[in-house]
Amino acid sequence: MKRAILLFLCLALLMTLPAAAAEGRVSYLGGAEGYIFDPGSEHSPSDLFPEFKDVMPGDVISQKIIVKNDAAEGVKANIYLRALGAHADSAEFLSKLWLRVKKSGEAAYMFDAAADDRAQLADWVLLGTLYSGGEVELEVELTVPVELDNRFASAVGYLDWEFKVEEFPAEPEDPTPPDTGDNGLIFLWIFLAILSAGLTVLFAKLRRRQK
Image (cartoon, rainbow, N blue to C red; front, side, top):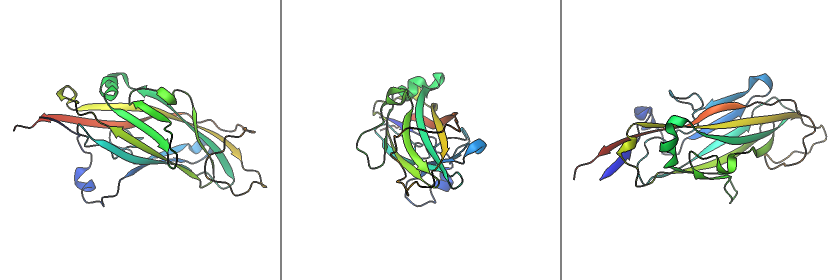
């Protein structure tokens, strides 16, 4: 019988935490301050997937990513996401895994394809128009096939996503808005931030278990 066991980062620490799933966070600070990515890892400061460790064949793992506008009061920002695909040296490994991404509360997936693909995120997708303090929640699901084998022992997968921001001041007469979902015209393009982030860090260590 073949099993895929992920090399679990900070295993001793994580085993002491409550059972609630960890989440990734992207905080936009505004202007030249850019972004903060949490939690990060020793393999990538922008690793947003603490739950995608310790994977085994047959696993279906879910976690959330919170994208928040932490800019100063009075700043409104359109935040976009697109996928650049997998790093060349991990494309085969990630092509074996399936990734789905959607906004919480929505039925349709904005990404539903092999993890190495660009698919529906080949072009910029608007996550939301966020006023200061607003946030949007993404639900991400990773499926590991039962057939994953020992060829991927100790494999590491890197998947690049990019975030882009259009920042503009909120009009004084703007009503208190919902956090997301504004697809209207953009009147002022102040800031564009594109940060290539090695978001997905997957470690798989395969071993055989004797009967």
